[in-house]
Length: 291
Ligand code: NAD
Image (cartoon, rainbow, N blue to C red; front, side, top):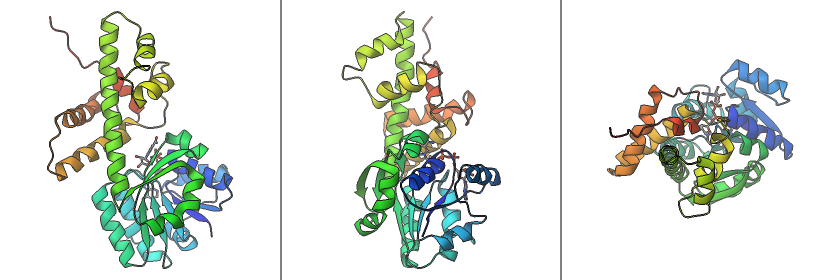
């Protein structure tokens, strides 16, 4: 049976090609006819309609923009609940909402299926190389069943807890990444105003305790060289940080710094459209100078 993959965008495309390279038959589907044609031109098998894929596959990966699309693919009239053979395993790599994930997992289980939340890090490059990191929520037995497929698309997998835990972990990870990016932009403004060279100063900081994934990886790879071509957009990062803020609100928490970071990302929509690279947030010069 082919592995199904629904959503063949920046991430889904790479996962499909990695699966194929590692010896798995693959059948893909995307809502966009243009994307379906582009993937067929790259040699991927693509279903003409969603139910065709769901009926043909007992393991189905989702790589979708948001929870509403995940809901549509699982609960919609063309979706998994309506068309899947008993015992279908859904692996949701979307950065989605923990509460929606838990509800869908319960519905799927009651219908004789299973859901793992397995959001990813590593970007389109990691998806294409099969070297992503996955943080996984769900039952150990389902994870064991998914392992051959997960091993074909990821270098590291961490089982972080029950259903929804993968999505909580991913939202906290991206909140931290978003906070580090805002602070990097502020640090760059301080360094420039002090008349120093950002790259040189960070070669010192990256040897010390102020370093982060953002200063060690994002700064040289996508920021200092002006490339801004990571494949992850402002729109998607704003979504993730909005979801992280919704999560701490749901938990009745008011973390002051995280709330400020969430506010800055939300406000960035005025200057940086959704399609821009997410690293562009560091180009906003937010600190004012006292006269
Ligand atoms: P993308 O927009 O490039 O791809 C999403 C694809 O899903 C699109 O091709 C779209 O047409 C398709 N789609 C939307 N609704 C659909 C539906 N109902 N049925 C079938 N197809 C549908 O996004 P992406 O960058 O590939 O990201 C996918 C997910 O992975 C997102 O949740 C994102 O937050 C997460 N993610 C992305 C990155 C990254 O660097 N791009 C990194 C980690 C996680």
